[in-house]
Amino acid sequence: MVSDLDEIFERILSSKIFKDREKLLPDYVPDELPHRDEQIRKLATVLAPALRGSRPSNVFIYGLTGTGKTAVAKYVLRKLAEKGGDKLLHVYINCRQSNTNYRVLSELANGIGVKVPFTGIATSEVMKRVLTGLEARGRVVIVVLDEIDHLVKRSGDDVLYFLTRINEQLSRAKVSIIGITNDLKFTEFLDARVKSSLGEEELVFPPYTSAELEDILKRRAREALREEALEPGVIPLCAAIAARQNGDCRLALDLLLKAADIAERLGEEKVRVEHVRMAQKEIEKNLAVDVIKTMPLHVKLVLAAIYALDRDRVRNITTGVIYNRYVELTKLLGVEPVTQRRVSDIINELDMLGIINARVVSLGRYGRTKVIKLSVPRKSIEEGLKEDLVLLGVSELIVR
DNA sequence: AATCCACAGGAAGTGCTGGGCG
DNA sequence: CGCCCAGCACTTCCTGTGGATT
Image 1: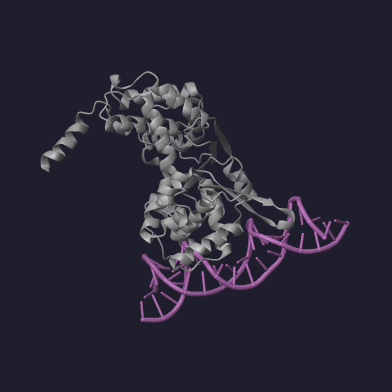
Image 2: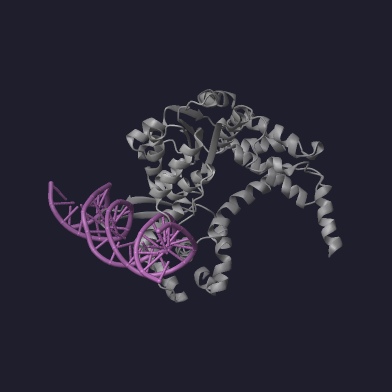
């Protein structure tokens, strides 16, 4: 037993592939961010006034996933904090994780050292506490709202309105906001005043080109992997695949990491091109399988219904057809079905997760509905649902 | 040109959980 | 203790609508 563990640890320590695996993890921000000089300089220029204690303009950052928005923001703020010492403060909030008004405000409160419970208190009360907390500390606070579109789509722009106007109520403290989004059209949802206030400065992050991705991967590989552990074609392939996906650097790094993990697991001495291919498949599959596994029961059942219909080669899979099949499933399980209204929402949720594709179409006389197609392989869904269906003893009923 | 299907999707409310506050 | 808060997973009730068929 103990020697077993020893062996496992020893293998990690004596890895033939990795030098420092952490450097490939998604939240690692390197010491330099190549090919984003322009964005870094612009953002630094905008934020610099904070060093003199005056309020920087609010900034809006646009760019597709994996174009370095978050990394640049964190990088510049880190540098700024080094220079500014305790004259300024920044709070980073990811609005995908904290996707309600209340949660964003309480994160902000915690960030400025104000204790608030995570539930049980009115939102307006949190606003008050944030206000007094800010005034008590009295400095420049830069609030980063990453993936801000998630917040606004779910909970509206109340918090943004509060934050953009907060300076009117402060005398000692100053607040500026950095909003980050990958949804280019999202400002449509905003109140005009919020929009103009938030967009004092705008910053656009173009996708990385294949060559740029290659360069980034090379630098990162130098830190993370052993020198001899890379076959020549590996990095170009990772870069090429990611370049096709809107120049998504996160994907490129993830591919390299997964490929290296696979090579390590197989006990090989080098990461090879075929490992990248395997990594690509794994990433695609895992994405879907993992979300499916963690879905609530009725969402799974609706998905199971869609799965069964697709399998039975039903031509037009519409909301009504899905609902009928879903109700059958609930009967088999002896569970109360939810209403069609709710199923309609579940279908939209599945669509947003990218597991299915739902588009509204009008079939004339035959009404207006949604036509649904699966957008991941049936195999992945099978795998995601497998455990539950076996558990519930109905897999053969669905699979037929 | 009018009709009418099969839903879409908004609004408001319910009941529950997990937590305040005084 | 009683009352209040937010969030979630729903329900009930509802109005709206694109376009093939009449």
